[in-house]
Image (cartoon, rainbow, N blue to C red):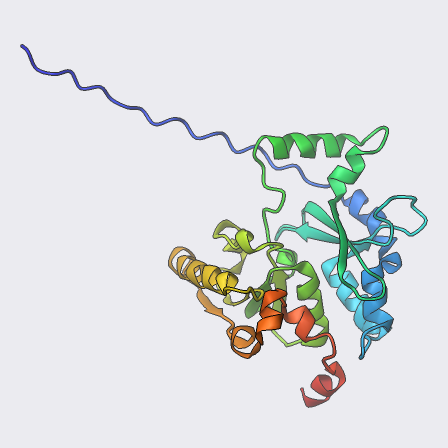
Length: 270
């Protein structure tokens, strides 16, 4: 009769995942009208050592559905490029707004389309709902940049960190059957974001870092992706092997290495 009474410990319920809020297509369409005002697109068209042709730029702008903030908008982000994150179902999940220096193409400013809308005197309802979704724990970036381009003809998905780098690689190193995508940050390489890559081969291209942390983290994550998704994942070692210390300390990526790449010779040799 004197036995101890066991108490069951009930685990805390997991917080409910909020329903996603999508950016209306009309909002992206509005930004697409300003894409040629963006310093980023202008730079790729005229300021690189080997600038790209109007046909090439039209193609990459159309494929990735890039947008821009018009120069006459009066906004502090005027001249920025808009990178939309579009899922496999074609829904716009969020839009990253990045301002680049028109002379160097280095990043000057960063924002989100929904936050820009919220700063207006009378913000649209979608932006209010998006902010509530984010506050409730919803992911602003639930998919890869370029996820909507991963289709039946895609054999390999090359994933880098920055959308800028994915665009550089798509322009400067086009390869049949390869789709270039981006996570938008080192920590965004997750199983959930890569489910669209099931059935494809994946090549990870982490940025350089002074201590090699980026390469090590993505190499460890590659093991998880192989195990959880059953896909072939390789981590590109090219930059880690060839880059000198000064480039490592500045966190170079393929966009930096492809700055003066002669894509004309690449195209001739294909």
